[in-house]
Length: 146
Image 1 (cartoon, rainbow, N blue to C red):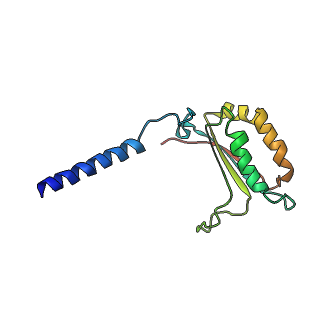
Image 2: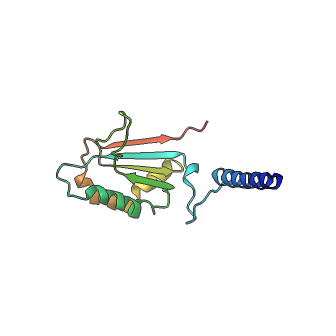
Image 3: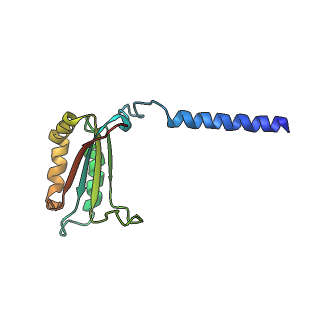
């Protein structure tokens, strides 16, 4: 009985140590050698509504192209792109947009570099004709550490 209890205690401790080690690791790069997003304090959010005459599949094209054209830009630390969560249960969760983009940078200068990068300009040129600019929202903020 003592042997089984000791064995179980060791398993629990090893499991806990692995969990703590993985969740609190100070890893600064991902598998591709790109700096990890948690260290990038400058946040750029773009909320896009498509025009009514946008071609079918334009929202999906915005998302695909964001990952293919924008993510590789050197100053982009991380990128998230997607459609509204149709299952959102909060009455405050907005669903009146087509696509949202969230990009992380080290600083404002890196955002400027991204904004002027040929891949970003090509992305904008390709998709802007389908975007309702009267509803376009852009938010930039610096993550405040506590």
